[in-house]
Image (cartoon, rainbow, N blue to C red):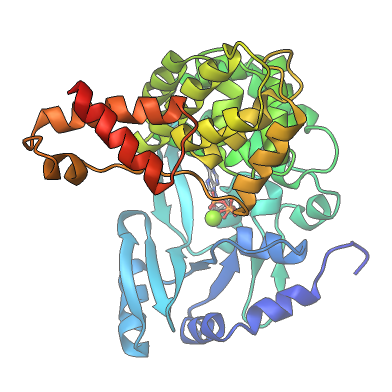
Length: 413
Ligand code: ATP
Ligand code: MG
């Protein structure tokens, strides 16, 4: 082969025992089943596979029948649009009946089951996502996907503008797949068409946008792709607010690919941003909490009056946790405020590596009850005052200190 792709990896893929069992059960004299999409694409460029999708001439009921006969477990995940999850030796595979679009309205597609692998390929989004692989090792490429993959180009199948009008989510997928797989700049035709159809994004559900955006934020070339999106007017709308590229870049260089921290760095400046983003992107409670924690700590650090030293770090890891502190400090590194001293970085690293343990507040409700405070809201109030004092006094954890603290708060109560 003249391209730079790893065609041997396809053979390795086909030798995976569970997948092989599946394909052997689902191929016969009449029926044909192939691996399709992301798994083929990633094998060829040596990237890890996320999930393995198969496409088949068999109808959903036949997929289920065959699973039963072969002793495979199955889940009718998306039976209406032809997808059954078949589980072989504990490994799940999405098996989907070949499809053809009958009708599209920019958000939903009406599909009918088909018999034609080529039509199924052509209704997919990008050329690199439309490759399929037969049990015999033959690679099928109806859209010039191999050449594009070798050149690391992300291009729409067919006319970009038409394809976007069928499903506006493809605009975000275009940026996401570019950020993950492309080598050079964005495909001109795709970018132009995305710009022209931008208003169509407003018709999409928040859930679909959320999913693509979070994946985009952790893609390999997220930083420059996000900037390009901003230059072309996509970002303010997606975030419903302003973006901080410097902080995003520093956090992206620092974290291990956490989409929520990256969203925080990019789009959270004050606590209200967390609330707005939750609504705008239908974030989960946990995700919103993370954004809010980021905002709160950011506010604390930005208004810290004195230079920041090791004891300030001790207090902040006790109050906000090591992870959040690390992220916020990474985000604002190099900014004029606060002024962070060298020993602060050393202290932070010690907490991060576990060389130093994070101080834990030494009193519990039971300690107060034991000393005669009746169970109830009073216990919480006293504990919270004690915790404030503990934080202000250096987060000591030795027993003598804990005893003294207990006596003092009781005397005040
Ligand atoms: P990943 O590794 O990110 O999961 P993937 O290629 O598996 O990559 P998915 O979003 O899981 O991406 O989609 C699976 C396949 O379905 C794609 O490769 C593509 O062929 C097709 N596909 C998914 N969404 C669309 C869409 N909106 N329009 C057209 N084709 C799509
Ligand atoms: Mg996938």
